[in-house]
Image 1 (spheres, each protein chain N blue to C red):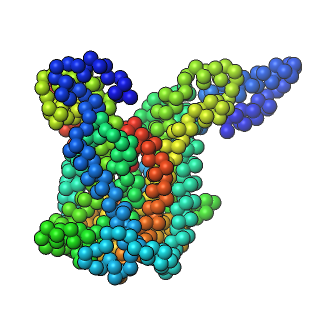
Image 2: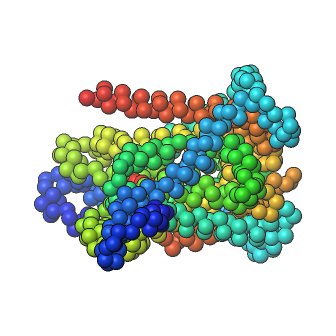
Length: 303
Length: 329
């Protein structure tokens, strides 16, 4: 697109050897490609190495020089991982899928509703409340984990008593996120013209009907991107699940840390587990990496 | 909810003799005005409820817990401890070391990370072939689970069988004990952190760079500025808000470094951050104190200390940022 917009006059000026152009119009030099190639090799290497070790035997990993290509032991290592005592790897994969799916659906629903309200509805205190919501993004809530653990342990009996050790302890705090609301608000502000909302209102449509008939169809792209980010973030979440979850009710990242907690660490098994814990996200990434990149570049995405 | 309660109220009013259609119209306009007034609050309420209960309340309640004796192994031994936990903290050598390690690792990781991200972004900002593929490629680490990548780095940095020491041996560097030696362990952890975040920050910068007006570059190019001069003199000042945003984010993240020091350990179950705590961090110490030593009261005191440190750093960030604005004018 940039090339189409650049007027030919610019290229015909006297100092036209790449100097009077903005960076986007300056063709990359060979050295730039070298920098990028090295970066991408370094970025991919640990993931490749996970696969190499996960497919080797312990003897093969101890060899010097180490083998740089995958071996044939992947299936056997998976089998060992699935049958490791006290790890519950397969169950943990299912748990992760449950937690990440429930949170994603909930985040998409509640954040799009709130984002709609902040973007298109008029109500008293709207702008201060939005500022407050954005301010919560900077609150390091992770520091409250000690008290969060106590809170979960003291849940009243009508909510099922102690939540620690149950998937809901990981699900509940993430049901709706400030980032999600903010992201949806920004998207709806731009994607839905005020006139359409006003027109629907004049026709007698209720707020919920406007959400359903006007907003919901317009926010499909945002649903996709926010959904991907939420799913990945919850799938990768580690610290709080490690603290609160116990027994066989754990997520895959916690199961992975258990694989590595033995007295003697077997890297072939640990990394076979790591590979399995990474694989679903790699699949998502290869399908939708472009959209994830766009989401981050829009500048709104927070880890 | 307001819809139903309103309807209910409406039916309780004494019925005036009116044609049914008009009552219905009045009722509908009532419902509609309630809908316009109150539904917005209903829509935004879930966020504020969830944040208050699971975010804000624990953060504040943490302060109360830190003033109490609160042991998971001895729940009956429960009561006000006054400032005892904080007094213990002041004389705790392990905390002092964890604090130094946290800052050390933070400095070794953040400064190179943001510089590399800036350079990477400026390279990605050129006219490139395979543009999208390259952008997606640099983001690969960001999507990898932190636990998984830390464990593969532990294998890569293993003293005897690790591939890092093998590569170093090719250039005649003696085997480095990445886990036992304090500063090498900091470097190893910094490499893990940077591996994950350089590409992500680069894309944030790239997004910001694309909104810098192009004529600024053209003017400076006519003055004979080289590309790297343009980067420092035009791009960096123009994307300053984004730079500050990433500095604040990496500060908050860096102060809470947890997974890397936990899983880089030989014995991850100990949560000690190395055999002598050489790469122990404050966040890891909170975890160990709370759930390995079962002393939640003391863990809460450490957490509050960390909270104060983060607040001070955030304030410092804001102060420096404002001063530079004022100085520039």
